[in-house]
Image 1: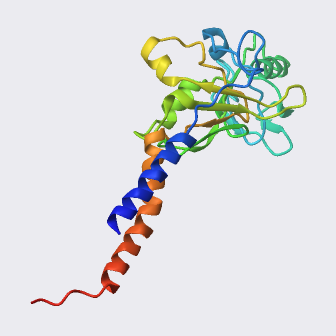
Image 2: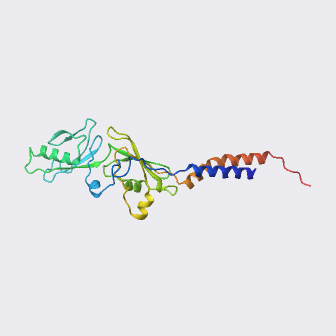
Image 3: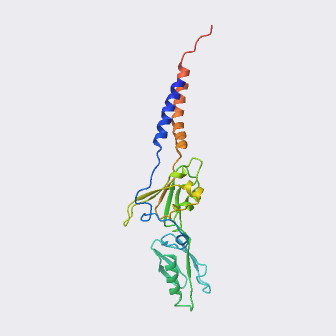
Length: 244
């Protein structure tokens, strides 16, 4: 019986290794005309993030005590209420656009007014990291500055990860089709080539698969338990030979 179990496990292992195939990027995903673009220092520092409910904002206005250091959350109607300046509609504007708008509103009351608006808490947009081979999977706040490397550094690989086969999927949008890129994180770590360190977009989905060996071990454990129990049951049911 033990030989039979070993035989089936061997066949099962061969099948699993054969099924764990490498994936490849969609043709429209990468390259000069691809939907994914490598992150540059300019991209990461100069975000085009557009705020929305329930993001939290912080105002910096030296010399205007009413709003200096004032923190507020964007309401569901897309507005904020500021001391002295009243209600302002801010949804779908960038921090730079907001800074200009609030500065213009403050200029009605102050000379040489200068206001800078910052996003204190990102809570309206997200990207996602999935896979049992990462330590912290789930929904992540999107800031407009997220990259593949920063996202995976935050999520963290486990020893089961297959870093050469990380996928980044971009859902279909009104002006672009769905696309998926396969990222070789090991190559980036080992060579410093950050060509595939793409700038993420809202809604992107990162998936980290198990390595072929880790997946084989997990799947083997699923069938090993029932088979072991079956062997034990058969052995218990088998009549024992009487001694001489």
